[in-house]
Image (cartoon, rainbow, N blue to C red; front, side, top):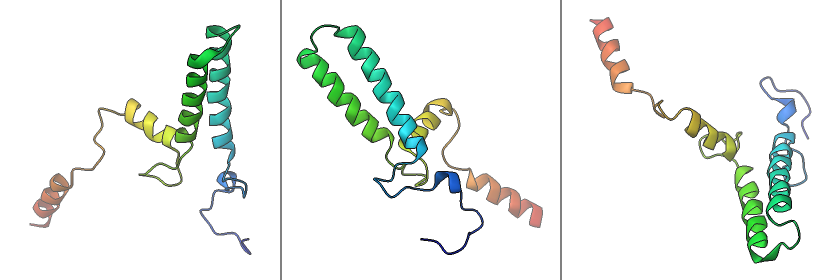
Length: 109
C-alpha cells in the first residue's frame, strides 16, 4: 500500500482493510456489548421479551454510533467527541480571536 514511511503517520492507528476496524473501535464494541450482555443477564434472566430486544437493538445502534468518525477530528471517534464535550463543558470550543488580534495591534504600536 505505502512504499515508504511518512513521518507523522501513527502505525498503531493504521486502519485495517476489513470494515475499517482498529483496535480502539474493537475495544469500544467489546465494552458496549459486554455492558449489554450484563444488562440483559440481570434484567431479563429467563425471558428476553420485546423490551429486551429493544434494549439489544438500541445498544447495537449506540455501538455503531460511538465508532463513527467524529466531525471535528476525522481521525477520532464519536465517543471521544462526546467525552470531550462532557468533561470540558466549561471550556469554549473556539478560540477568542478578537482578544488576540487586539493584543497584537497593541504590541505593534
